[in-house]
Amino acid sequence: MNDRPDSLPAHLVSILASPSHPGNIGAVARSLKTMGLSSLRLVTPDEFPSPIASARASGALDVLNAASQYEDFGAAIADCRLVVGTSNRTRSLSYPHVTPREIAPVLIEEARKGPVAICYGREECGLLNEQLAQCHYHIEIPANPDYSSLNLASAVQVISYELRLAFLADQGRSGIENRDAWPPTYDLERLGCQSWDEPPATAAEVDGLIGHFERATHHTGFLDPKNPMLGMVRLRRLFNRARVDRVEINILRGILRSVEKMLPSTNERETQDNYGSPGQGEKNV
Amino acid sequence: MNDRPDSLPAHLVSILASPSHPGNIGAVARSLKTMGLSSLRLVTPDEFPSPIASARASGALDVLNAASQYEDFGAAIADCRLVVGTSNRTRSLSYPHVTPREIAPVLIEEARKGPVAICYGREECGLLNEQLAQCHYHIEIPANPDYSSLNLASAVQVISYELRLAFLADQGRSGIENRDAWPPTYDLERLGCQSWDEPPATAAEVDGLIGHFERATHHTGFLDPKNPMLGMVRLRRLFNRARVDRVEINILRGILRSVEKMLPSTNERETQDNYGSPGQGEKNV
Image: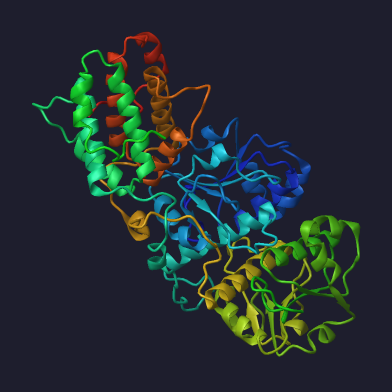
């Protein structure tokens, strides 16, 4: 797994979820190798190994033959610290959507520390909702809205190309020998101006959530108020880091209420009083 | 030849010089259309039209069927004000070499004024020296020096992708319309360069946490398994968005364990068995 100067980190793992055509698997191996990538995982391919895959891999037989196979998607991403999936459809639940160019430098950086998964769905349907739900980010290739269906190996080619360019840019290289680097044009600030599907929680609502956690865990015996821990501080940091939204607060407080109802030691009245002002993060969803 | 808002200028003409495989011609049509390009010229294709080409074109049959044929390369580029050709070999005579990213904005700008040719050579050998000699610039995709042989349609995909992004950038667009947002305070740079105090959870550890939430909330009655809600999907999204770390997972699972211990309905043995593998998010903090 030695990384040669022109090879991208082996921790950059490309995952094909249930590919149907063996030719596409071979073509993907070729796309990966041309960009210096080498790690390929296959989840329940319909047909593999296959002479068709080998023929399409052309000079990338080594990448193809080193591909590992998995029985389910969860197992294929299990060791990965960051998981991104390609998606070109709007889903009912919104996720952070990024372009290949935006996410590539992040993936390069993260792959220095551990395995990172870039996941591609089955040709006909893409990644399933339950697979996309396991991804930190959804990558969307900015395609023609009238016809956005890239061939599988073409999608892999574009994203791997962006990974290679981010890798080279990080080294101050253009990828063409004896040439100066082009000026990077990533517009990170633009990312900051998006709107989420639910309003973000206010500070008071996060306060209410943490207070609720404190009371509930006091009742369960997890939290000893005489011996405070960093636990609640860490939970607050977690929720703030995620910019927890109002619906998420409602879910978590609904769970905590359901816990309190079950606890023999809970005084229903007292707990009610401590919930905070009515209508604030109270509605169950 | 009307340009719709999402179509790139029709003056951007892709030219295939003597393609040998009809399947590749179809795949090129598909690559072009996914990026909003539509003008394709073929110079002495070995086999065309062909049902193989049509099959590989998939939803881009219109682009394929509108392709025009030429008897020689010179005729195909005759009306073009700017001609660029792909090349991945160093030639005896040096030409201005550019990356797709560098040249794309130039091509977009020039195509407003008249036809511009982007030329691709025959699969086995690329553009001939006399064809490259007719190009203003040589485009080189920054590929793995050990294996730089992109499939023809993949090369077209990458260059057409850069053309699309340059076209969109010129309009101040990212190419992802109405996209779901990124949490406003999410700092992409920090994400890439952070030295967080704890290692991020793996996908398997997040799975373990969500599974634990499901079991515990099933016991408390919050979660009705026969009537699944988006709640758990939203919690997973929340934790992934925050890139929950290992200590945070331990805290949350410690809370859930403390809840389960208090519940009259919880069978301690069964719960223990369901916790997942030992040492994974188990230590209380």
